[in-house]
Image (cartoon, rainbow, N blue to C red):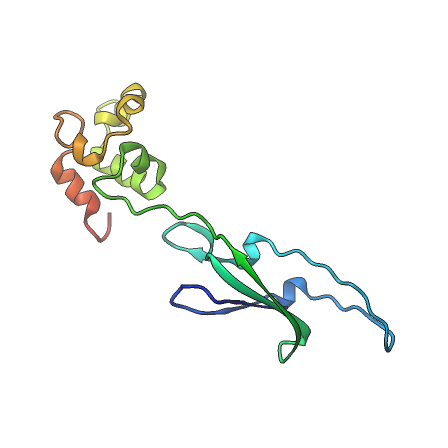
Length: 163
């Protein structure tokens, strides 16, 4: 089986799954048989460093089968919705969005730091406070003193480079 993605990614590639899906069906001359196999989302996926997981690009895929990759006898197109992506975090992202993102949460905890007791500091010290103002953007939270989110912290969070 050969699988080609005709999507929007810069890298166009073919995903050759013959090792995973291939099985021989022995037939006498003139004999036919139906052969079925399942394609899973993982069969269409690639590893994303940013997302730290497997993603499936939305778009049209062509699935082709045949005696070999040079002798493809049957093809069909299928449309895939793809994997939902995490939106990039910005100053207008909410506290909940930052905390729900693995990289954003780690960076936020690192920037706000911990108290003398070793527990998260600032706004992160209170689950109740996070529940109440979790829908505030970090830009808005930077205006309130004592939360650990300042405009300087926000600038560091949004700066490219090692966090």
